Amino acid sequence: MTMQVISVPSAPFAGQKPGTSGLRKKVKVFSQARYLENFVQAIFDTLSGQQGQTLVLGGDGRYYNDVAIQTILRMAAAAGFGRVLVGRDGILSTPAASAVIRKWQAFGGIILSASHNEGGPEGDFGIKYNLGNGGPANEAFTDAVYRRTQEISAYRTVESPAVDLSRIGESRIGAMRVSVIDPVADYAELLESLFDFDRIAALLSRPDFRMRFDAMHAVTGPYARAILEERLGAPAGTVVNGIPLPDFAGGHPDPNPVWAADLVAALADPASGLSFGAASDGDGDRNMIVGPNFVVSPSDSLAVLAANHALVPAYAGGLAGVARSMPTSCAVDRVAQALGIPCYETPTGWKYFGSLLDAGKATLCGEESAGTGSNHVREKDGLWAVLYWLNILAVRATSADVIVREHWQRFGRNVYSRHDYEAIETDRADRLMDELRARLPQLAGSESCGLHIAAADDFSYTDPVDGSRSERQGVRVMLDDGSRVVFRLSGTGTEGATLRVYLERFVADPSQHEVPTQEALAPLIRLADAVARIQAVTGREKADVIS
Ligand code: VG1
Ligand code: CO
View 1 (spheres, rainbow, N blue to C red):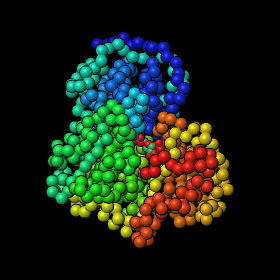
View 2 (cartoon, rainbow, N blue to C red):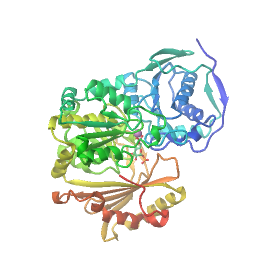
View 3 (cartoon, rainbow, N blue to C red):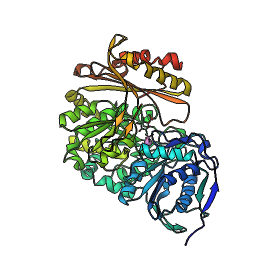
View 4 (cartoon, rainbow, N blue to C red):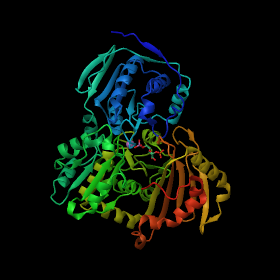
């Protein structure tokens, strides 16, 4: 059965430029007539060879997800896809979408998410395209999509009633099959193949071990319930805030000590009886790991996972290499050195890890922003990180805080923090970065706040696999002793600009490891303000979010 393709006249919208992870805008912007359609058409116009192929489609369940899915299904039929695999109720976490693309050898996938950004009618929406390897499209592709959005004159769709997404099963839009799939099954099966589920189940059944997983009213609820409670036998109630809500109950599903303060407080309270806590974000790709009265810094988490790979079945044979984004602390570099494996330093954003993973150069990857993952998919993966930690805890029979402290004893501690200045006027943020870049030549070799700056540059990256170049990925100010301050503007926000200041100092001496983080970093915090004139240019006295 063929259907008549309708071409609907349209005209470009300004600003449809994908950022660090797809296009993110307010729901109010996305729900304008033709806005979503233009962007989807630009993606389809940039592809070639999709006729008859399979597309994976799903999202984090935020407000507007359901509307967008029906629109995209019709447009996929008009674009000639042969089949769409769509998660039940339009749900697929980001790592699950990656797993489904890979398992079913799909042509690509569209993921609807604005990750940890607020949801609801006043909140944010987002969309991104993943390639057949399951990973976010590279910069060359997203640049081409952006160019297409600037010249678009029509989008193509078909007339067809809404597909019932509430039941698993098959239907058709014209010649295109629509398969509503269980959003959890393929992903759960993949994770089970990586870890020692018997040992984890034994740990979870111990009376002296109690865990809490906070799904933050976002997409990981059904995944965590199925894997932790149903498959691994954790007591009912282990997963809290487990029902995905379109507005995430009004919060930010951002697993950090600010937005997951309840979880951190529970683990700090001996009366809770909890020994391990974890949380994930809106779309399930981030993770937070909490021990008794102890929050594991994401950079340390990556280093600990790498150092303990021999305890996990999937990685016991050895790691080909590790990779971290540039602002992520150098803790994992020290582990790589000890293991005698390469450590790659990439720009911020998961899209840069894909080619290293595809080429077998890296096995584990991570970012300071609570993202870790491996070659099992091509996205960061929140529940994967939680299971990896549980596997380590099960084998080592000790708690997360002890594991991190022992890690510091062995490798030294890379004390680390990120200071975010949110919703700054764009002009001021741009001015701050421009002036900082202009001062770079004078900074190297100079003194500031009593500290000697050994080097200063604007990070650029050449992909070791395909040779592609990415410039202007963040200003680095480096001291003699390995301490660093990094400055960059966020590429995921939807209001003004967000300045991220990343601070890192290496402390070898174990007697100094318990100095509170902000205290240990105080000289660098002063240096950051002096070098970038943060207060003077932005008018802000302190950061909005310190993580
Ligand atoms: C942020 C993080 C980055 C992460 C990106 C997407 O980007 O810093 O590490 O890859 O979000 O994560 P930015 O440009 O705002 O610093 V997610 O979980 O929002 O898809
Ligand atoms: Co996310």
